[in-house]
Image 1: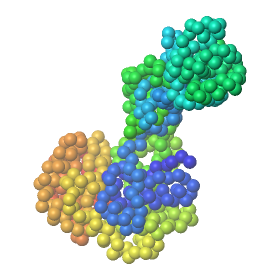
Image 2: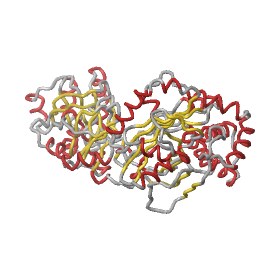
Image 3: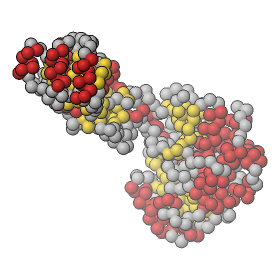
Image 4: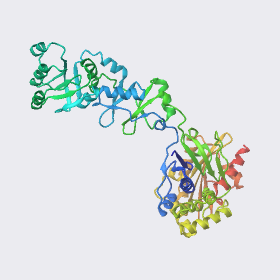
Length: 540
């Protein structure tokens, strides 16, 4: 069953992560192979919730672009140095590909064998040299094992085409000789007595019992083939190891984790028709033809807690967005087909999921209820945010009962766990819960962090302001602001980069607003921060 990845926004908060997990569980109950994911590392608050309810972290997605590994290229397609030319030919013929990667015993790429290389080998002046194995010779001439003493067979091929007396008197044979002969028993006896490496009986002829006994004593390998001598002589060269061919060693490989869009840029420059594919350990996975490249292998994704490209995964435009569940304003994402888009003005994405579980008559397990509760308590600051609705309150009561916790006690402990700034860099603090928004022709960045001890951050406010200016200048924002929300006082201190002061003064009607000003009652970015800023900037 095809996977559907469920994830929230970049710099995920607790509501985003827990919603991805809760919705994935719901989808699985409904028969969908849903996989929860995150787009970056999770914060301490979320880690606390996951650990408390015994749920592992979702997988990490660096991006959702179409990768080479997503394409239907020819996989498990290679030959080893020990494989025969015959093996290589048949594999190429079956795959309809005129090239095949050659690898060592560890699947590391050694080079490429082509049909042209095989054809060229058939005209080699050293065609009488055999460098193969017993098994490969058996396969090449459809032989039957009669005596086997050696696995590796190397030597010079002689075909008994002269009179028997001429061969016995004029053709020297030794331990490096391979003789192909029919039912010429005097030649067979001479060859075995000479201790040759391999005797090939053509035409399905049987060897005499006394000659078989001699061969056992002399350790002479014997194979019987049904083919006549002419055909067997033509085919035995195909038994040679592929490593005996003069193959191409300097090959351009493509990682299976390469973005298809990046690969196409390479392919348009190099213009090769085939590319070996390797994994992160440089093991060959198969071969990619240009005709294999398609944008039909898009990942199916469900977005939670966001609905804009700016906040979503890199490469989102290369996916099939099949559903969105969010509680924010409608963003910039568009789809090429109708989808389920659930958007409600509630305090948390998990509140919407609570409704969806009930609509589908799916029981909410204890650990999932605990995570959903965590997401609601986080986004509503334990139901104290102005975004809180009666539906949020009802959901919290029921989910707390299922999870078996006192939501006020648990919620405060969770927020405290996530509010510690100890050991965090200033960049980590800023990006703990950070989102960027397009406003007209501009972009702004808004970070928010909740804490029970804002003083440890405000003591270094000048350094934070320097960071905000660096981010604004370096990433071409109109301005960047950080709202430090005091969980106890239920308000936020604001720090900001250049060009933000007049806007913030107008939004909050505070002519005295400066760096670190406390905004009483301002705790919701969605309802008390972003709308006013967008309205003010819309008048610029």
